Length: 608
Image: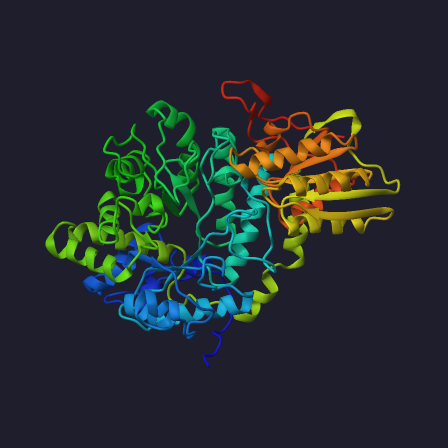
């Protein structure tokens, strides 16, 4: 059993600011280094990074390019999947074998099952860092995660504070709330040894049919998105975790999911300048650490038809040279369909590196990917100068974020930081300001406190149950949960209609009801059938706010943009008028028919 490293009395950034990069170099015993109490500047960081680089073998340099996943809850956990993927049994052995620049954590939904509780996660981080610091050049790891907030892309469950996602925060229109949300997420991640969050999403979601971005975006207005992306970056930095704006050059106008296919963004260069690029410019101006590329084709920027991740004109020409970004460029996951469709495991990592990417996230067939990059460098297809440029940026990033000389965290302290009372109280207040009332005919809302029976029905048993339980705890209220699923059939719809007739009011939850898929049509049929009972019906979109396109005549309609427990609790408070609906739409909602008008404009929101 390993011992927990001693608590850190100062933050990583304080260590860097207090000791200076020269002091870090001394701690690492780099040749010719001398300690200094002076505040470090970028030149000192570069000088230290160059000294580190000289100590590294070619294989160690190549290892720094890769961000890998590992299976298990501790560094010493044996897992069959590690053996299948890497030929070794434990996460620590994966680090020793490949000497990667980073790891990325996932929960059991993807498979790696790295995340159980704060102390365990901190222990895993410490164990992986220990393995990295015992290997070769002894360079600490970037430990990454996708924790965007909201209900779509998140890995940490409770006790981690479940903050609202970007579109919900944008509905609240408070830069301070955005900043505080990111700070809370960052503080909790840092306490567990996670030093890189792949957030915020900087995409401008102007396509209601977008299947992959949606509520992950701050909305459809480039100015609002730019302001809030910058505040999010600022918040992560306050929380002492590195931030990553994604997905460059903008994934907001697509109806294809890049996890399964290769989207094409047909914006002109002027549209890109007006819509897609402003949030990335704002992130760069705010000092974002990292930018993640997208697996999307953008003909106006590169006519070759390759995804942005593999495009030198986009990665190097636009992002590096034109926008002047000097930080770390990482790929979106290279095992996604948008990357694997035309680029096999021995091609994708080399093409991304040649395009100008610094780190290669989740490259499939790691042995093949490593060998391909090694062969490309040894053959001169990728020059060692090009390789060194990326490795230097990776090392500088780690130095700048204070990962040298000891990247460990206090495992017991993590328990007190993650999900603490102050964080959850702030989360409750912030979430309460995001609920948006879009339609309210004939004074349907707020509901009176008089005794009444409420049917809660619609999408997902867990969310229906949460709302029903919350309503049922109110004095004089009785609630019945009846989940109908994502695609209710005729029998389930009839069951809900019968139940609605036996209750005073019905609350129906929808998710993706605006979708053209069968589930969208079926959910819309449910809402319409409930509305025909003559009893009050309140529809609530718990993800994208566009669902009302399919049932525009529903008596009352709210958007929560999220189905976290806190969002649903805030919803019930709004239903009964405990708090007013303060949110305003961060997108416009068009009519369902193509070429039709606008149902609700950007900025629309009703109050009580």
